[in-house]
Image 1 (cartoon, rainbow, N blue to C red):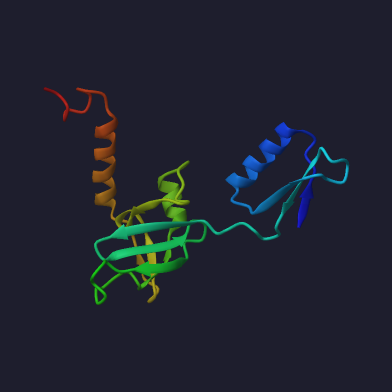
Image 2 (cartoon, rainbow, N blue to C red):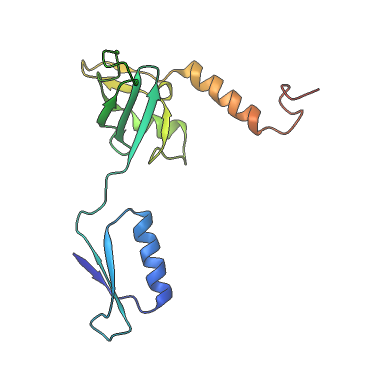
Length: 155
């Protein structure tokens, strides 16, 4: 356990906001060692919860670690227990995804399975669907473009 004694209420707010961003478990109690008007923040060791990402597709969904790409769970489409599913995927290529989308994060997000490269339980690597990415990006740019700038919105 790590202990902090913030010097002011403002410092307490800043520290707890940072701990929340890092998804760390902590307790803040009034009355530290210095005097009754201080706060003590205790951070639990190894308390960062592994934040996950997920991907969906025609054959169900997968949940995976946004940092390692390791699969943590599989879900088949509702009402289709015998569906093919994605249970042959063992790891998502998060490095390739981050290189494609610098500055973006998978953490806590859901993406289309077509947007991900991955490895199967047989050791095969399946590339992302580059045509899907191109179509998706064109659609996204078209949605963001001002009227008359991309040809689709011209009257």
